[in-house]
Every structure is written in structure tokens, then in C-alpha cells.
Length: 339
Ligand SMILES: CC(C)(COP(=O)(O)OP(=O)(O)OC[C@H]1O[C@@H](n2cnc3c(N)ncnc32)[C@H](O)[C@@H]1OP(=O)(O)O)[C@@H](O)C(=O)NCCC(=O)NCCS
Image (cartoon, rainbow, N blue to C red; front, side, top):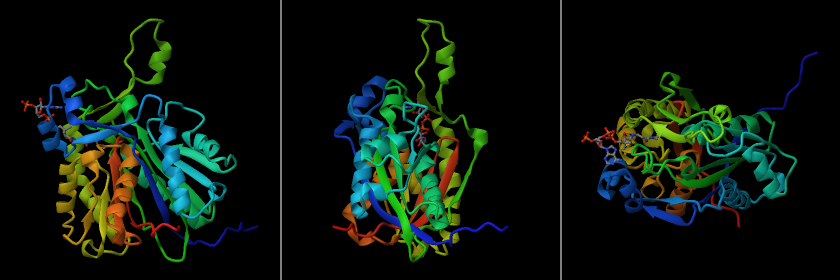
């Protein structure tokens, strides 16, 4: 017998929510430990300050706050969320997932829930999955969370990373729509450079170590120049493919919300794609740093706050990072929140 399936439908972002921890840390508080300066960090990255979660504030504490805002703005109750996808590389447990911890916090313990690991591309990976799930009818309302507590996994004495990474969480709800609200995702990897950003050693090294033996904590490490060159030369073409796949051109796009890794990388992508000045470019990095999977929803939320006219307009999202992996798609930005 031929199997039957549900009719395909369209999906869109119904809402966005964000949470930034209260503790703002200026470059001056970081620079001393890495023989750097506020001026050097600002010049090379565009970062002036970033937020770190408190010692008792967990990744899921931040994610829950962002999720509750996104669910309320979508005009939904928590039990109307039928799947949670949590993109993170900083949940300090292998199992069960951060997504199921979110379910328990929301008082909805029955929905599908899982984590994904695609680092700074993770939010765009999760949006792609959620779009497919809603389109195929396997879920009606998917909560997508990008959240990181990178301060737990960054060595404050590492000159290559200490000034870049930060904490925060963003969330969107993706649900059914009359029109196409999420364009095709263009994604992939350059896994031959998978060691350009990594966390090591593996947990097995800790298990194998003799009692009392000093083993390095698995902090994030990176080859800055390798990552910089890759992003500058290869991400613009990915963005252009995503714009084309959505049936648009750079001059018919309304906004660009790139992963917030480095202001100079954002400049290079804008130039490479020849985005006209009419395209609003979200630049959240100055006071947020690089929050990995959280950076795109945080930047999107801040952009809609300051530019409410962009609600329901078309934006290119583009994430890239450890793997090295990347993903981009054009989305219709969330509508003005329901009261
Ligand atoms: C990390 C990054 C800012 C470093 O900038 P860079 O120009 O590549 O720096 P380099 O490693 O080539 O070093 C250049 C000089 O700065 C110095 N330097 C390196 N790190 C420094 C620091 N934290 N503070 C001050 N000086 C530093 C080096 O010693 C070197 O000095 P020299 O010219 O006298 O030898 C840059 O490579 C970058 O942003 N890469 C992308 C990283 C990223 O976005 N990762 C996340 C992607 S998801």
C-alpha cells in the first residue's frame, strides 16, 4: 500500500525573544589578562563590551527567559509548542538535552525536544529544520532557541578568544503561514578545516586521567586568521545563493542579519554581496560580542526594537562557525508582536 502523508504547507517566524545577562564587561576588564588593549580589540573586532552571565545563572536560565518572551509574543501558550530545537555548544551535560530542560521549565513535558550542535551556524540550521518540520506537518509550532554561556568555556587568558566570546540567548517560534515565510536554506561545511575552532580535550581524556592529574578544561580555541579569511571570502557567495534561492536580488532585500563574529567580517560580506545602502545591516556585536548560536536572534531582536518598520520584511540570515559549517536563508521577519 502507498503511504499517505500530510499536505505540504508554508512556515514563517511568528515571533522573536531575547535575553542578555545583566553583567556588561568592558574590553578594559579583559585586556589586562591577555596583554591587549581596548583600542586593539575595538579595531580588530568592533567589540567594546559584552555580557557575561553570573556564576549562578545557567544557560537554560537565559534560554528560558528568551523562550517565554518569544512564546508570549506569538500569542501562544507553552503547551501549544509541539517541538523545541535548542542550538548550543555550551550545555554542560551530554544527556538529557537542554531542550528537555526547557520543556520542564515551561511546564510542557510532552512535546518533542532535542539539541543540535552547529556552533555559530546553529541558529540558521535550526530554523531550517523547524521550517521543514512545520512544512511537512510533523509540528505546528516549533520553538527554536540559540543560547550560549561561552564564559564557562573560554579561557580568560587566551589571547585568541578571551575578547570575542560572550553569553546570551535568543528564541523564535516558527509556525504555519499562508505564504512562504522562510526561503530555502543554503548550507554546508568546509570540514577539512574542522580544527580551526574547537573545544578540547575530549571528556574521555578526563575520564582516562589518573586522579589528581592536571587536565586542561575543554575551552574554546581558534585559529583566528584561518577563520577570518574563510568567512571573508566564502560567506558572501553563500549569502548571494540564499538570496537567489528565495527569488530575490540584493536590492530587493530589506535587511541582513549576519552572525556577529567580527565587524570587519560583516563589512566584507556586505561588500562581497554588493548590498545596497537600502539594506539594513544588523550590527549588534559592539555591545554583545560573539554569542555563537545566540547572536543572530539577539541581533534580530535588537534590530526590530530600534527599527519596527522592519517587522514582516525580508531579511537574509547567515551563520558560520566551528566545523567549519555555515547556513543562510532569507526569512520574513516576525510580525509586530500580538498584545
Ligand atoms: C582573532 C582576530 C581578531 C585576530 O586578529 P589578527 O589580525 O588575525 O591577529 P594576528 O593573530 O594576525 O596577530 C596580529 C598581531 O596582533 C597581535 N595580537 C594577537 N592577539 C592579540 C590580542 N588579543 N591583543 C593584542 N594583540 C594581539 C599579534 O601578536 C600580532 O602582533 P605582531 O604583528 O606584532 O606579530 C582575527 O583573526 C579574527 O577576528 N578572526 C576571526 C575570529 C572569529 O570571528 N571567530 C569566530 C567565528 S564564528
